[in-house]
Length: 108
Ligand SMILES: [Zn+2]
Image (tube, rainbow, N blue to C red; front, top):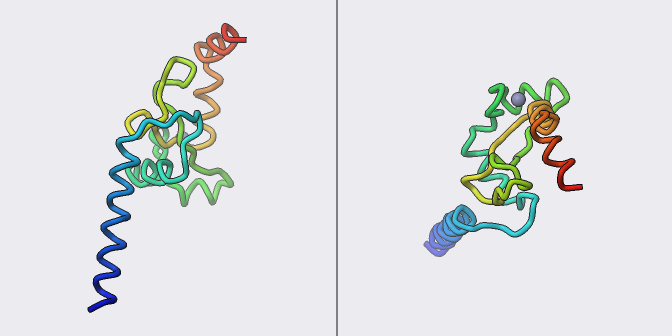
C-alpha cells in the first residue's frame, strides 16, 4: 500500500508540474526542456508544417525542434500556446523567409 501511495503521489506531482509549465510565460528565448517535451507530445511528435513523424525524421538524419509560432523578434512569447513542433528543414525554411530576414536586418 505504501508503494501504491508513492506512485500515486509522484503521478500527482508530475501532473501538477505539467499544468504549471503550460500556464507559464518564460523569459528565455529558448524553450525549457519540460515545455519542449509537453509541446512535442501535444503535436504527437510530428512536424506541424510537413507532417513528418520523429521516427521518419531520424531515419532521414533530421530531427524535430520546438519554435515560436509568433516570432520572438515580433514579441512572441516563450509559452505553451506560442510553441510549435517543426522539423529542422521546415524550421530553417521558416527562418529564411524574406519577411523574417527583413525583420532580422532591421534589428541589427
Ligand atoms: Zn517539416
